[in-house]
Length: 75
Image 1 (cartoon, helix red, strand yellow):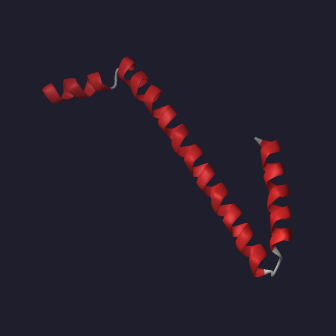
Image 2 (cartoon, helix red, strand yellow; image 1 turned 180 degrees about the horizontal axis):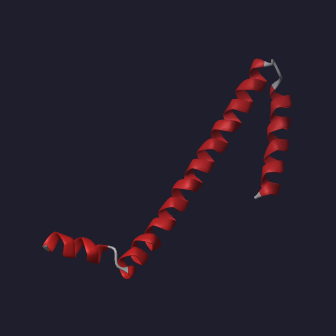
């Protein structure tokens, strides 16, 4: 009886609004961190591929600078 009452009160509108109000920013922070981690991983993979192809440091630097400039236009 008491458990049913507590369970029913837990899903009333104010409690749901508070939980969602806290959950949305947390999910946003996690998504942003995931995005940045994947971006760093992609940049490292690009650099590794360029080194494996035998490109010089100047060529790699030019390619990275061009891709960084393109990425800043998107955001």
